[in-house]
Length: 340
Image (cartoon, rainbow, N blue to C red; front, side):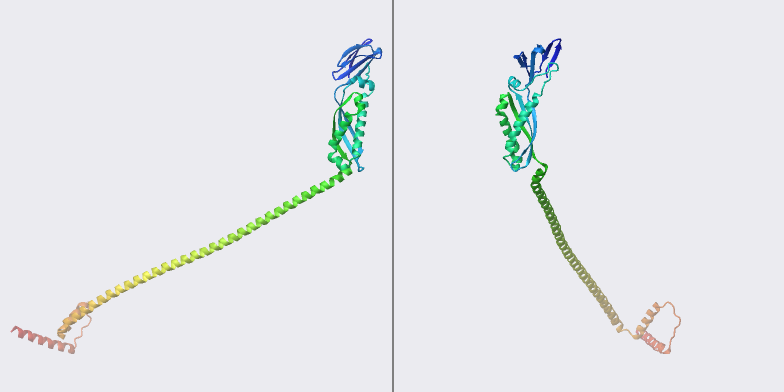
């Protein structure tokens, strides 16, 4: 927007660097340029200001596809002025000499012109494609078509306009059609999710079965090892019992042999003792064999007397003393005879 300063009957204009100003006086173009400043008489002058920066024009319009489905196209057109003098002659960019604003709405005219042309190009393309093709590849194709159509349009280039870029942000059908188109994909995704869930559950069941089989195999192996351990313990117990029995048998046999040897030795000792006693008794009896009876009786009485500690009664019968006295007399007689 130009900055206009008033000095009595004169006006001073100062424009931005992004604006092209054209000054007419009495119907003739006297000066023009970008970002210029000058004095002018308002009653004899006309001033136009053309923007030279890139401008963006959003568009949103509806079209119908080959299969009669409504489609909404949304995007942005970037344009600029390439010939400010030409467009100033075709579209009124005159500014108010007091406020510096446009007297009319030139940018809206340019926007309407480009939007209508882009809409016509898009309608023609949409009408020749079904909705699936439009949604699948429509954005790139439509962008190239609209950009090429606007760039090659004689009317725009003849007005001094250049199209810098065209962007198609979205192409969407109606909500019902979009939902209907999403159903197969949604069902396919749902089927894949169900299949993944089923496979995950099947894998979990398979893992659980493998775990149970592993536990069963472990239990079987533990039972087998326990049986082997019990059998080995029994075998070891039998071996230990047999060894103990053998040791006890050996001990018993050794004890029996020892007792037998001891008994044999005792028997031999007793036999030898008794034999010696018998022989001694026999020898003693041989000694007494030639001794008279009276001597024997005397010796017996002497021995008997040595064994007695106390004599309560002594009974001497005639039958006992008679022979004894007789023998005594005989013995005395023999002794006397021997002395004489």
